[in-house]
Length: 121
Image (cartoon, rainbow, N blue to C red):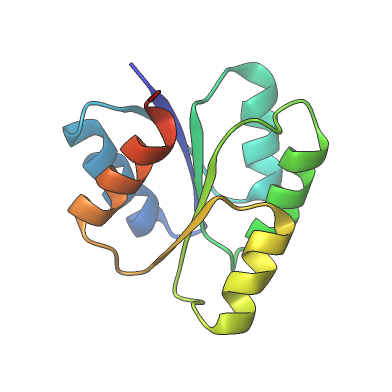
């Protein structure tokens, strides 16, 4: 079973995304910011990171940069955020994101994106 790390400072968003992933057959864990996510990455393996951008402490851009510079560089990263302007998407991709989704994304959009990035061809 593929495991997704959901990173968002909103408890409601973490719960919603976790429910969507579990209903689609994924295992999940959650973190409330980038620093907590990095701690979880050191403790257990994940197949994908689904992260918000605007969070207290370490934001999503910094989390992505640190993941890409570290031992977890191969993990696909999807940004899911209300920040979807051209500059926001560019900053996300420059940091190392693989895909960007706009909140609110439908369960189908989320699941299809996660599957696209975690299933082997």
